[in-house]
Structures are given as structure tokens and as C-alpha cells.
Image (tube, rainbow, N blue to C red):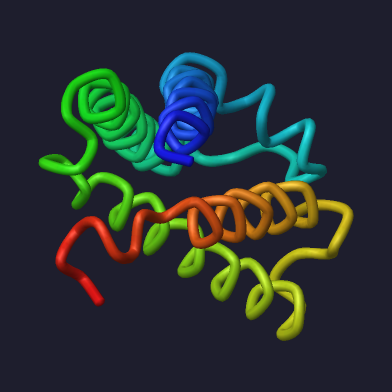
Length: 130
């Protein structure tokens, strides 16, 4: 089960890095894909900063996955926390009408699926976090 968790973490981290690079270098294209339209330059800057965070987090998640995962279990906990909070924020944004499901649904589903995978593969008894 630990090997499966490592594989899922690496896949998640690769997607996180790619998403971060898109936020940094392609904010206009992402806005268009989401149906947002044109975004202000300051918003592009904020998206770039978020992209940097995603790239850094993805890189460290890969490092944790290929090294001793149990010693670096906090990266799994980070990924779980990031995903469930992203689900909550995406659901809230859809409910109050900031975005439509067609704009945020893919992100909501992606984060929910990975949260469920991380929860089901988490080594509960082996980490001391019982």
C-alpha cells in the first residue's frame, strides 16, 4: 500500500508542477479555458505567485515520495489538507455563484479524487498518527 501511495503522490505532484507552470507562464490561456475572460495584470502576478507555490510543493512532494515516505509523511498530510480545502473552496465558490460548475468542476473533482486516494492509502498505523 505504501508503494501505491508513492505512485499516487508522484502523479499528483507532477500535475501540481504542471499546473504551477501554467499559472506562471500561461495565465491568459487558463482564464480563457475556464471561461473567465480577460484578467488584470495584477491577477496574473498573483497567479504566478500561486504557480511558484505549486511548483515548489510538487517538487518537495516528489522528494518525499522517492525518499523515506514515512519520515516525510507531513507532505502526504499537506497534500490531503490542500485537496480537502480546495474542494471546500471550489464548492463554496460554485454555491455562492462566483463560478459555475463548468468553470470549477474539474478542479473540484480532481481534488476530491486525490483526497479520497490519499485517505485510503494513508499508512495510519505505521506513522504514529492513530
